[in-house]
Length: 285
Ligand SMILES: [Zn+2]
Ligand SMILES: [Zn+2]
Image (tube, rainbow, N blue to C red; front, side, top):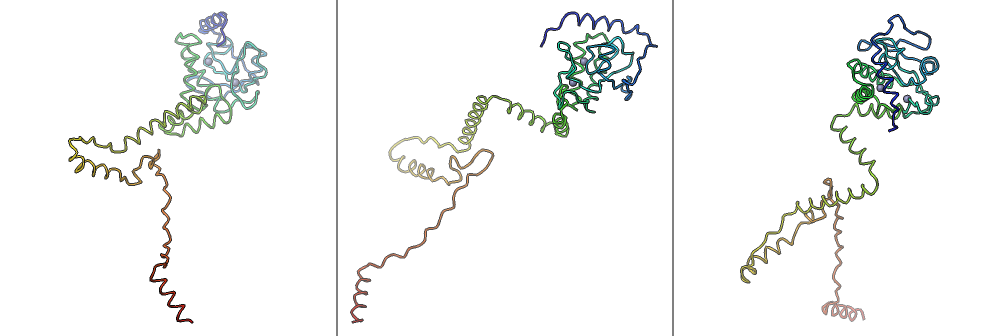
């Protein structure tokens, strides 16, 4: 994170402190400002961010309220209609969003998410919380709302993903999150995990098989009468119980069907057959 100049926190504190003495009759109006709705006791406006930056404040970003900008009247929330990434000055950089195009209009979801952010932030600052801490509360409120993939993503793909996540059960969501984390792992880590998984599955296979009982070798007679027949019986394991017959996830290994050998009649080259042939030849003469 870029180190913030101390001047910013001084400005924020002074504006926050002076907000209570605002002139109630000063209400800026114009074509650049459109009323959208009332929300939680605030009037939410869509403003032309470019106009605000040019005429009121060069560092006006996505939105603002009475406690962060001295010119925003009490009870008003201003949200910029566009991201306008290309016009941002280096060093001020209010837009660090992931977008489909640099100057796109903010989406409905993004507008709603930002409005909640500003309202949450303003409510906390009214109680005396400093801007940076209140801003974090605003970000958290946006994450909890969940209409965006994250507060800095206003791409169509990101919004679609957020919508999809919304329709999932908590279990499905947890699974999807874990799969996403797995997918982001470096290749070496994936290999290590795969090895560990194979090892675990191998252990399970061993567990599934009955362990051979330890037979006490009392005497040669015992071995011959008891141990040997038992050992022989154990060696005849049906194929479906073999060590690699069961694959992970319960799939049974396919064993090729046993081909029945065609029955070949035994050659009649016995003495009797030869004798019969000889007799046949003789009768034909
Ligand atoms: Zn932005
Ligand atoms: Zn904020």
